[in-house]
Each structure stands twice: as structure tokens, then as C-alpha cells.
Length: 540
Ligand code: NAD
Ligand code: MG
Image (cartoon, rainbow, N blue to C red):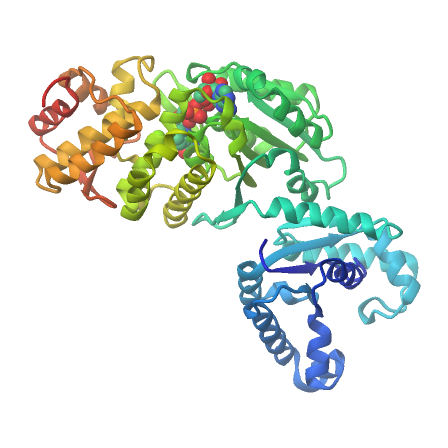
């Protein structure tokens, strides 16, 4: 569990009361940052504001929060109203704990505040004026509160024990928080990785439920709906037994036509913008329903619950959503980020072995393009990987997401760096294309593509054969196919029509060592033809 628990929320939302009760329950110290400042300054907050100015107060507040963040022993902290206005504070809070927002309906806040009439900002107003002012202030501060990791309602004053239980329940789920993705265009979303965490993921929905009449929809495919029916029902149950929309499983169904059925489904059921898609699926439905979320009424939130290894380490992270067009894969799409990604390793128990292998291909790719240590980890844990060992899988998923998040954080829209994620893909796509997307799954085609790319790098003198062999030995050990009788000419033509390639140039991502790649353009056709021999049967 992350060290500290920080509470934020509007005045009278119960930060101090709940904070104290939580501290008692966990037998931790309770700190109210405002009280610490008052004690240190030897005067009240209004006196500090009057005599020393707000800047001085904010400086003291920063110091207090930084001290708490550095403190190794876990505390429960109630934050002052303006604390989240300062980015340094948010950084310190995030790095050292969980930020919980307490909320209550404006009517209830107004009633609580009116009862005491001690809050200077809201003193001496009649009921109507006070409620109106609270509504305005809540709106102004929403962007601060929205920084919270999760929200808990403190409406029912009589039942504090219940609020504490809910928070503890959420903190339990929060233990699976693995990392945050921060796309270069702004925003931030968490990735959770754990075992059997789908049934407790409801705390992610609590924040959304702050909006009255919020509605949910689960999207999945026909195969997953059968294989993971129990988990699907759990998820659905958490979202108020919301409807489930099932796409037909399979890449060939990733079409605008099928997506249109989702739009119709939602429109017939009067889904408004106040709705959220929960995608319980692999990459096909994840991409398709993600594009649905990006475009339904100009965009609604969505949460990814990836059910394949590939979607956990690749398609759920990075914000690319799309459907296929007869002219090419993923040609119609958008960049649109999810609100969260929940990787529940338990759901992989029913995933067919070849789909597991497909995910592993992308994981090996991360090692080759970015991180030799990670590559080495895989070399040393082949057996554990093959028997789906939980801790090993968790590390593979975690590090893969971290690498993808880092790359996407620098280059969300593929202006440069993100292209390195296409390692093995230029060749892999050609293989998929000339085999009509039937012979190999995407991941397997990519694994073959990585072999061809490594050979290209050898022929260009960028790596030596030892490095090529090292990559291929790991692929062999994990059980990837070694060869495929490809026709170099057909493959060359298949590569030429990659619509996302830079105009007029052919782009290749090639290794310069394990853990590093570079972009190379316009390689001689003869050399590329020769590279395909890397995967011709019996060339050794
Ligand atoms: P998929 O979604 O088709 O799932 C593979 C198969 O496994 C399907 O038949 C599915 O029904 C079944 N399945 C899924 N989870 C299961 C489970 N837990 N138990 C039993 N069966 C299960 O394929 P995928 O490999 O997850 O995704 C491939 C798609 O991802 C492609 O369309 C590709 O374009 C896309 N993709 C997107 C990105 C991106 O950045 N958006 C990145 C990589 C791949
Ligand atoms: Mg891929």
C-alpha cells in the first residue's frame, strides 16, 4: 500500500472527521496541514493572510506537504482547500500516497455549513444564497478535486463506519495501481495490474457517479462473453447491472459497419454524454469500442479491461483507437485516451495459448527496442513465462506498459519516437497481408518480422550476427515459429501499400543492439529481398 492517505474535498465534506476516524482505525497519526501551519506561525490563517500575504501561507503549506511526503512512517492527512492548486504539492502527494476525495451533495454541504456558520467565505448568507455560492465554488474547484485518485461520498453522516469501509475497500484495489500514463497532449490515466481485481474495480466508477443519472455500458465479444462469463457479470454488476453489447469476435469484424451497431444500440437506449463504456475485451473490440467512445456524441469516457496479453501490454495503452477499412487496417480512427486501464491477470486463464504467444511477441519487442535488462529478464525466466507464473507475468506486463507509456508520453501522435514501437511490424504487416490475415495472428507475424528486421540490420552492418542470434534464441525458446516460406517480391509489394508510411519513403525500424533501435529509410530492394531469407525454411 502506498504510504500516506491524503484527503481532499470541499469544506464540510468531512475531511477532518473521516481523516481522524481513518487514522484511528489504521492506528496512524492524523495531520491537518492547516493546523500545522497555524501552530508553526503562531497565528490564525486569516492573520497569516493579512500580515504576511497568501504567498507566505502557500510557501508554508508546500513545506508541510513536502515534509509529510518525505516521512517514511504512514500518515493520514487532511489537505487545505487550495493545496491542489500547486503542482509541486500534487507531485509530492502522488509520489508518496493516495489522494482521496470526499464529496457530498451541495445541499448537504450547505446544510452542514449553515448549522455552524463558522466558515468565513460562507458566513452570514441565507440558505438560498449559501447553496448558490457553494455550487459556484464547487464548479471552480472541480479541476482540483478531479486530481484525486478516487472519490467517496460522505453524504450519510450517521454512517461513518460505512464510509471508512468503502475507503479501505478502495485502498485495497489501489494496491494494484502500477503506473500512470501521461500523454504528451496532457492528461493522465492510471494502469492497474493484479490478480482478480475486476470484481473490486468499482471504485473507478464512483468518481463518474458523481454526475447524477450516469450510465454504463459493457462492450465485449461473443467468445470472451462465454469464456469469462462470471467476470463479465461481476463487472456488469458493479455498473448497476448495465446492458452488455457483444461484437462478433475476430479481426474481420473490426469494421465501421459493426461499430454502427453499437452506435444504434446506444442511441436506441438513449445513452447521453453522461455515459461510460467499459471495455472487457482484447484489442479488436478495445480498438473498435474505443473509437466508438471517441465519437459517440463527440466523445464519452471509457475504461479498458483488457482480456488478452496483447491488449494488456499494447493496444490498451497509448490511446490509438480505430476500425479497419477494406483499403487497410486501422485506417479510420483517432487518438483518444481511456480513463483507466485494469489488467486483471486472472482473466488470462482462458486465453488460448497462441493468443498468449501473440502477446509475448510484443513484450519481446519492448526488450529489443528499449531495454536490454528487460530482455535479459526474459532470457532468464523462459520457463516461468511459459507456465504463466503470476509474478513473472506481472513484471512483464508492468515493464511493457511502462515502456509504452514512456514512449507515448514523449510522442503521443507518432511524430518521431513512437515509430520505434513498429519494430518488426513493417515486415509483420506484409506477412499478415500476403497470408490474408488468416495464417498468423498479428503477434506471430510480428515475431517473424523481428527476425527479418534483425537480418536487415546485420546486412547493413548495424548489428553483428551474435546479436541477431540472441534475439532469435529468445523467440525460439518461447516457442515462436522460426520460418515461413515467404515470396520476397509479394512481400515487397505488400509493404509498399502501407498507408501510414511516410509518403514515398519506406521506413524500417532496425536494431543497433539489444535495447536500442533506429529509423532507417529507403533501403535497397535487393537487400530487403535478401533479408526475407532469414525466415525461409532450412536456410541454416
Ligand atoms: P482479439 O481481441 O481478437 O482477441 C483474440 C481472441 O481471443 C479473440 O477471439 C477473443 O475473442 C479471444 N479472447 C480474448 N480474451 C480472451 C480470454 N480472456 N479468454 C478467452 N478468449 C479470449 O485480439 P488481440 O490480440 O487482443 O488484439 C488484436 C487487435 O489489437 C488488432 O486489431 C490490432 O490492430 C489491435 N492493436 C491495437 C493497438 C493500439 O495501439 N491500439 C496496438 C496493438 C494491436
Ligand atoms: Mg503490434
